Image 1 (cartoon, one colour):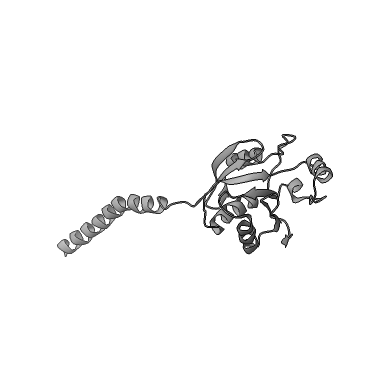
Image 2 (cartoon, rainbow, N blue to C red):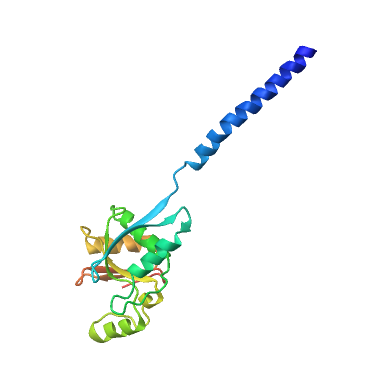
Length: 183
């Protein structure tokens, strides 16, 4: 009987010690799983600026990175900055994957537009909407170097995330996170 009690205590102590030793390994294993990062690499054709930035980890947008992207995509005519819809960043990241060039640098033709810039473009060019999604911080005009513009358009249409405009003469595609439509 005495030896049975000692034996049970030894088993309990052994289990306890194993738990103490192995618990940090289980925690380390659980916390060392890779966290999905979303990254954008952009080149702005009008400001000649580049940015390569992780803007999202797991399901959380990184506020400092989003602020930097908002500034990068500012109205290049006025310098005004707005808060862009972060779904636009996800759309760009997904679009590079959809054309088979995940993570590649995207050329930015136009990001945010103030009402003044939008009206200026309406007076001096064609095809500019009076109530453009650019003024809402929900649109961007892009090129992906090395990828035909028609291929970028087709990939954007397949994503079904919002509006897609195709400008073959100017070699860019408009994408936005507004209502789904095409032109």
